[in-house]
Image (tube, rainbow, N blue to C red; front, side):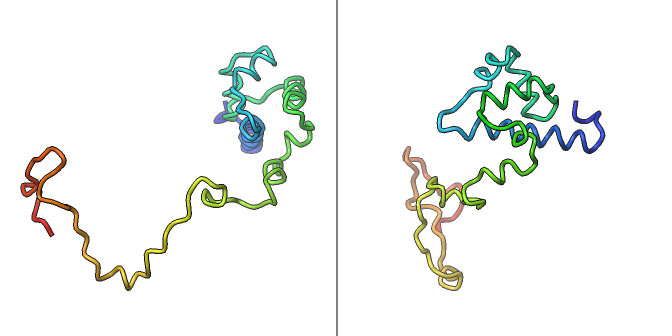
Length: 138
């Protein structure tokens, strides 16, 4: 386990695990851990331990993993592998990556400072229950 290793070995195990997970998740099609496990003839739990940095695969397994992902073994054990592989070496925000729609401009802080929030649109909720027991309507 990583907690019983000296600092450099633990750091290497965590870095290698991150690179392995990046290789698995960065493909256009999702690859489950059990697919790699079947290719290597190990359990999916072992792949999980490799990716979590709890175990370090032997050289033979590392070669098999590099061949499976079609990367060089030197790249797989490189601390800069993920950085070199990311598009334009830039970190994308969720909005840049297309996960979020652009937000509307709601105005400056000074414009919003005077706005009172109305927590209740009506005195009754969707079920018709009276909301006045929860507090005073603004």
